[in-house]
Every structure is written in structure tokens, then in C-alpha cells.
Image (cartoon, chains in turn green, blue):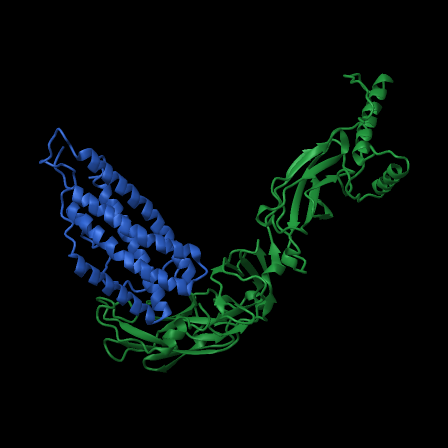
Length: 421
Length: 208
């Protein structure tokens, strides 16, 4: 129900019962063909009540022959016969009912209170709406996908259980001017969410709030003020590729592309990588992969399949100072490290490709040493790439030596070569 | 082919260009549609009573079977009528059901807004009633029988009156509206099932 508009119960409660022409025979209380039977009216018709309150109702019988009696009438509520002591005959044609401490309605279409004749036939019915007014919705959070739209989610007050249909309406307006607008696309990311697809302004704050309304009242959340640029998220990085690094059995190289929708704006994008061993559920997360589209995972187990995912945080869009919102993770990409005879280390952090700052202490120190060598020893060819090639060569050499000494089964032997210059 | 009631014999047909295969195909197709919709109508009824709450879903629940304006259940003598007459009644009932199902859907949208499957079934039923009614009229036309429906304007006026009646009934209270919806869904099931039976008698090889 839109806010402020009464439901059918309230409407029928306000409007007197219409005079139905003979054609309109579908209202209960019209005589059944051939029965010479009675009709009845229940009052109140479709009341709305608070949980725990009481109800006094009457069933007044009319009929042919006149002087229809209330003797023998009985009540049911949701199909269950009510105890006789809850009813009393008010007069010859009226049976009263008193219910106390009502529970919340069993279904949102209303509890069915029915007045029956002695033979069990239905004379009249009324629907009870027993519940609670809504509490203030809270915890509104919003995000914009690529600055094109806005999706908001909220938590209903009192965990949403009012026992009555409660309508939630997300409203928004530009902070300093403009009229109130109402979001129209609901339940896009869960039962309490709404999506605003277009016509959003940047560089100016919005005020956003949620109104909850049911038959017993309404409530309004606190107002959330935000700028679209402060809540931007984007698509996961596409084209994530994971590959081996030569023969290095403890490393994998991860490459990706910056999300295309924001590629012209992602000057300060952050990325995160997570990876796990194939048959594990524990992810390891590599943070601070700042504004680069490749990374090397080091310290991995040899001969092991790894699943890798990447996500992006487009913070700093148009100078926004806020943190930004992480995208979803990319689809998992798998690759395996080369096998080794030696057990490898357990796992480690993302390592940079050649020339990039190191995240591990050994490699950091090595980088510093190489830098010093280049400066003081005039070794201009030194680089991390050279170091990695040396490592690969060392491993090959180690394997070949073990085969010659009979440590390993004999196999193909390649020519042992030193690192490339 | 023996002359039995409901047969497809057309004595005026040119035997070299027989329309019978097309007519048979049309009847089979419409019969299949009616059979499918009978199943859907049963599902709609089950879904409907679930959302109204007890006693609507309880065995033995029997509100007064009051006639709905503009539509009644198939008469006891329906099966004894000639095939074209039965199909005409089927088509007329299905045509009358569509606006009534719309009224029920609108009211259920207020009573049970978080029951999307029920609302979808009601919307589909209105559409399917119209489609089946049109298909039955096409069979009648192919049989060479007049559809003999009321002229367009009075039919539209009758439909509007039925809708107004149903809407007014819902204004009289929620419980009567629930009962009306049950009645309409029940009538829909009865007429679709009746249509399936009537067409089944025309399907070659079907029961006489």
C-alpha cells in the first residue's frame, strides 16, 4: 500500500454497506435459493486491532420467516470453533462474541471470523487484522554502480514482524532543492531494497529515507545524506588470468584488466586478490594491490591447484575522499604451480613483478642490495628479472645434479645453462 | 463415418479437398490446451485457498454457492446438449470469466501483495480463459456452427456489469470478497474442465 492510502478494511469500515441490486447476489447474507434461510451481518466488519487488545463482535440474523433466532448460532475463527463461553445471546436475533488478548493475525489477508447457523452453514464473515504498527526502519545503506544508478537496502524496525502487511517506501530528494521522489523498483537485492535506475545527480548530496506504513500506523527512518560519488562500486575486474612464472614452483602470476565502465576514472583504484588451494574453503587475501593490474603470488605450494579472484574498489572518483565500495569478486580462475621434489612453503603474500616494490622482507632487502650494486658496482644489467631467472636456473641445476647422483629416477636431461644476460 | 452426435462429418465437403484434417488438428490442439489449463486451474484454486487462510483450505468448507453476476456453473443438462451448443456455452463462460478473474486479481493484490505466485496465476488465468474461449470459437467456426454470441456492444456491457457487480461485492467486506474469489476460481476450474470434456468428445477416437 502506498503511504497514506488506507487498505480495504479501512475503506469498508468508513463506507456504509452499499445497497446491492438484485443482480449482486455474491454478498454473503443473500438468501440461498430454495433454502428459505437466514442472512446475517457481523459487526464490526474487518476491524484492525493491536496485538493483545480485545474484540466485541455481534452477529445479527435477518431472515425469512421473521423472528429468526440467535439460538444455535456459533462462531469460528480461522476455521476453529470458538468456545461457547466466549459467546452470549444478546437478543433474539443477535449473538455476541468477546475475545481478549488477541494474537497477531495468522495470515496477511486477515483472520477469518465466521458466524454459523446451527447446521454449520455460513451466515456471515468478517476479517480481523491484528498486529503492530511499524517501527522505524534503520541501517540504510546505498551504493551506486559506476555512478549510473543507486541501490539502497535497509532493515525494517522490530525485525519486520508486524503481523500485518507493511509497505516500505524509499524516498529521496536533492538536499538543497527539489521535490521528494519515490523509488519504484523494489526487492532488487532482497526484500527490503530498492533500485533507482537513472537521473541521478553527481557532486550534490541526496537525502534518503524509508517510510513504513500499515493499517495501524507509519514510521519513518532517519535521513541518510550522501553524495553518489562517495558510494561508487563497479564491476569485478574482467579477464583475470593466472599463469605460472617460468619454472618457479612457488609462484603464480595474476593479471587482470581494470573494469571498463570506469576505466577512464580509476586513477586511484585499489584491488584485492584472494586465493585458495583447490580443496580448501579458506581464502587468503592480499591487500594493498594499489592501482596496478598485475601481481605475483609467492610462497605457494608446488604442484598445487589454486583458485584466484580479484575485486576492485574505485575510491577517489572525481576527488571523493570516501573509501569507495568493493566490487563483487571476479569469477574464480584456476592455475597450478609446477611440481617439485622438495616440499614447498605454506603460502605467502602477493609479490611484485620485476621493478615493483616488494612486499616480502627478503625480496625487499634484495632489491635494496641490487639497487646499491647498480649504483656502486656499475652492474647495470641487474634486475629482479635476472634474479628470478637465476632461481629457475638453480632449480633446474639442482634436479639435474640429483639425477646424476642417482637421487632421482633417470629422465630426460636438458643442457644446463646459466642465467640469460 | 456414422452420424453420431458430436462427429465431424460434413456432408457438404468436397471429398477431394477435405477440411477434416485441419479441423481435427484444431480440435486436438484446443483439447490439449483445455487439458493443460484444467491442471493450471486446479493449481490456482489450491494457491488461492492457501492465501485466504482457514477455513478456506479445510475439507468441508462450503460457503454459499451463490451465483456470480453474469456467470453460473455448467448446468446439469449441459452434457446432453448438442456439441455446438455445448461449445457455445463453453466459449461464452470463458469470455465472462476473464474480467471476473481480473477483479479477483486486483483485490488479491491488496489483500495478498506478497503473494506474487498467486497474483501471477490469476493474471495468467484471465489471459488463458480468453485464449481458450477464442480457440473454442475458432473450432465452432470451423465446424460451420454459428458462435451466436451476443452482439459486441451488449456483450461488453454485460462484462462491465459483471465487473461492477464483483467490485461492489468486494466493497462489502473482505470476507465476502474472499468468498467471491473462491467462487470465481472454482467456476474457472469447472468451465475449463467442462470445455476439455466437450472437446474430448469431438477428438477422433475420443469417447462418444
